[in-house]
Length: 155
Image 1: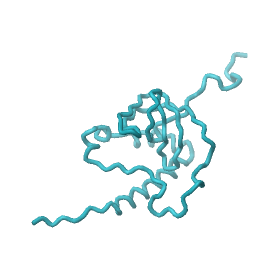
Image 2 (image 1 turned 135 degrees about the horizontal axis):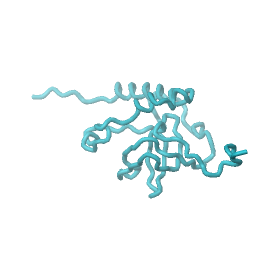
Image 3 (image 1 turned 60 degrees about the vertical axis):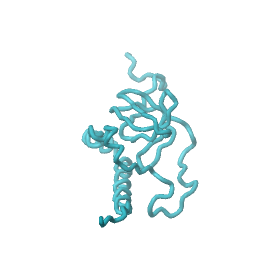
Image 4 (image 1 turned 45 degrees about the vertical axis):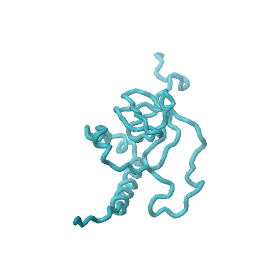
């Protein structure tokens, strides 16, 4: 007879929530910190993170509107009008899209950011029109070819 306890995610979820809040504040900090090479290197996935076999035995916890300890949830979460912005990927990243299909982005590939969640996971759309939640530190605003008057012109 096996003495098995029912697994309870409560402690893990609370730890994840604290880590999530810390990371959110870190991502909102001074650009010298949140865009530092040290932080970006720390946030890069390890080979096992990208291994599909590793993910099969894992539990994925997605951001939710009714997260632990949140009081009022509603339209207060909307902070800006809906306008997609183009960002480029600064490191390769592989995940699953919202339909559980492979979603892979290479360095310098661009995606449209549809939703910027304060927790650091952004909803992006690739050229194939796939939607996926993507870690914000992997993205950098794409520089547009036409940003007004050229300030670097020879005089």
